[in-house]
Length: 138
Image (tube, rainbow, N blue to C red; front, side, top):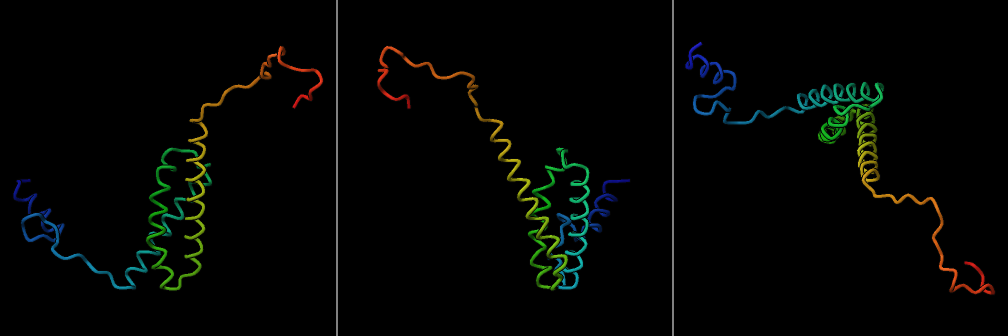
């Protein structure tokens, strides 16, 4: 395939009229298309999230995906609310809360693991020369 063929392919693929190959105007979705996109995206993300939870949620890939899922859910939640898809809204809202809790716990655990904890196995040594037997030991 020649360079001109590749340029023509990418220009037609991206709808460009030459130059950068990027369309000059963004595509504006109708409310029905936006709702369809929101329903499909949240369904896929919810399924992936729940599969990760069922597998124990221990993999690095799962934890790396949590912020992306939360962002997607927060993006689509207003679209679902506006379309009165309340059942899906509840699922998305619950998943967003769970993800927020998991991320917060992950941060707390990381910070706890980084703490320098002194091993205390004995009592403090007290200088007995200054103690008075008449005083209470508090």
